[in-house]
Image (cartoon, rainbow, N blue to C red; front, side, top):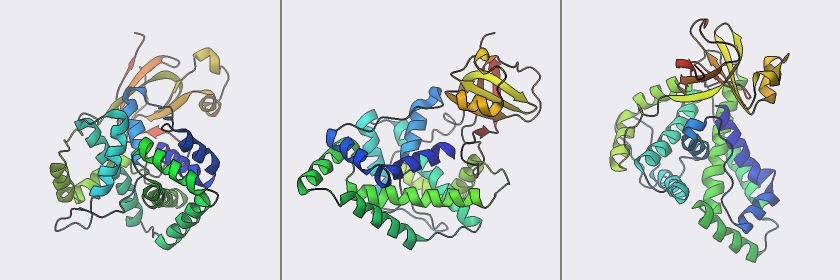
Length: 315
């Protein structure tokens, strides 16, 4: 959840905290630079997930539903986000699958929070969005407005009305749901994978029909696992800290928390039992489920529970 939360916070900050920076970025042209990816083996997948995670099921044109499920897939939203990503990546089966899966992951978290008692206040969200939209447009001249609207469409594939009413609205919806999970001390260790699988099973007729209509292939087996390559910097029974950007001599006498701060990137992996054949300070490749993190994981944590295999990459 952490990478999602960071991308959502960043998106909201574009308007609320960094209005002038956003205006200048759009006026000067160019898509916003992608943030660094902690999982280089599947860079495009994670970057895409970070982008699509800040979208929303608001526009209801062409929505599909079937008997037995109240869930509706937003066809307009899917088309909008797919068009935006095609500007960078072109069209492919993989891209269509990743866009759709990211939307499902987001919707599953909101649905999970609601099942535990979370109640969404849409009036409050709408009020916040209205205030931020007014703040953004207050100081713009008519000429500036025309210029940034044109650049926005060229660079991102959606206009500012869609940005505020669709993207930023869902930013707040998702942030509110995920914050509620964290603040209410949900300690059951339910993972994003479990939440997504339950959500898909419950709404499968709707999801399947949408995939058929949009020619979205089922690539779930292909992307179920990924690899992370780094140094095993700390081993504490079943938990192993793997870092990137540090060599063993860089973190001598450091605590795990200090190592996390010094590393370019880090991940904690939770094994089912103590690992005897994983050597401390060794260069390690871990194969794991990227959705096996606790859905209520606190900000700043990176713990994955489903490790498939690990090897010493120097052997």
